[in-house]
Image (cartoon, rainbow, N blue to C red; front, side, top):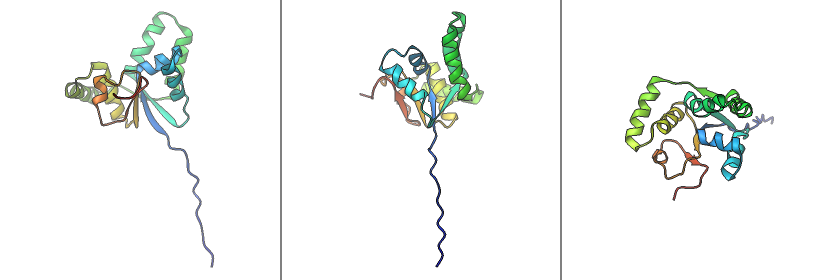
Length: 149
């Protein structure tokens, strides 16, 4: 009796990871554990990084204004290999609602809502896990500054 066996090679799952501004800044400075952890996340081949216009506005203008060419190149290298999430009016309205529901600061709300709209598997921030943004339960929220108390 002849049996056909199908062998399917398992491909690594790609985790869609939305990154907040502070992991990028921590990675650039690379001084402490948060910086090293951020570099590990940014270099993880099993992650698809998600970035947004809001993220660009948080990290690029100051570096450009101060003519920090190496810092600019670092951020650009991340943006070039990441999936870009552009501004969307419906997402901004959802951010408005999310901010009110959880008491989240404006830019944090925009980042979290953009991550949700993009179908991110996780949200990584350098904020303390006690910040209001970590009240959102619709996406795994990861802090480079430790676990929730």
